[in-house]
Image 1 (cartoon, rainbow over the protein chains, first blue to last red):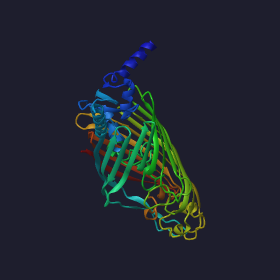
Image 2: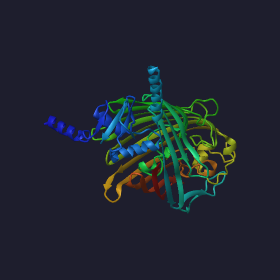
Image 3: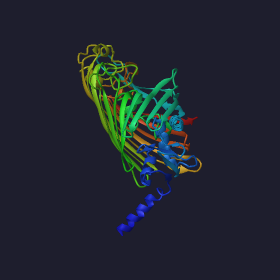
Image 4: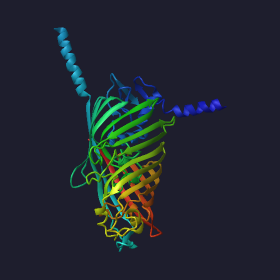
Length: 89
Length: 402
């Protein structure tokens, strides 16, 4: 019963993680956590957002806060070498 | 020849590829503000040997544009970046931030110029008005009674990644309020944990040491009182924040410890008209104003706050976030008269403390627009009686970008 509950909780928790589509060498859960913090790089690679991607409000609010504080946040760009390219959220 | 051409073209391509990485963006925000303070208590009629009486005086409503900012962020790859933050709200344009950053990696970055020091939840955030709950800064960053300077000049900082969770450190130094060759040191350490549901928990600690004697500087608002010859001080604190799709909860506690020397010429120039007996006991050792001889000033400034908000999504008004805040501040060295360098909150009370309870709401019809309305009750003990007065304020801020 406890295992079933744990699996259900895991499925609930990861449902939004699974929606993230991207190209790049980074675990999906890690990328999601980095995006929620407004991080713009991972292991020396820039995190870049597709111009067609719609950034969810929960991410955008944090990005606006960090941007107005002078920090670098993920920006719209093109796929390429040394880039983690987020196609959709 | 072909190899040479390729090398040259390759070199050119590499150069142009690097050049194309240079990205700049121009943005900022405008804030309109209005406030009305209820008739507030003041000390009047005091003399050199005794305090006066507490009377309430009316306050006119005030309009202001505290933030008319233009920011320019430029970065080249992940190695170089710069930031310029100008505010044109006054008669002159103020440079709030102007810094250059070089990163060896995300774990080691070097920033120099004029920068907000990482210190708790709010110091770097206060120029992101449209994004946070509340209108007024937490009391440790109220410009009338700051615990330390908001800006400094040099920083080494970095992030350590733990499967998407982050440990961030920052060490700072700068001119701050130093007397001469002192080396003030500041620091901040925070851990950010992201939950499976997207919730975020931040816990952190900050510290600051003036590095020796710090002096009052009219051009740099900080932690040194205007009537101090000099003071050696430290600030330490802890903070935490929890956020998820709906809830925001924040708490922080800070204490500044001062070991200073008063300028007795300045203190003895006060006539006692707006000072109280508690201040005469603490600052003048109970003697009459004008004949103070006690120049040693060892005291602690203590402050804490708690903030709670709950976001509700609506079709018509966007995100509506009611919030409440509870602030406490105590500075036993403070006086009330702002012209003398005082503060008409902590400086009013018998013991230098006050509390402020705030209820408000942020409405975000669009992510670029924030309408905030809140009301505060200020409470402090004056002449043994608890005095309260209210303040209502509203802020309209809009983020723009080119």
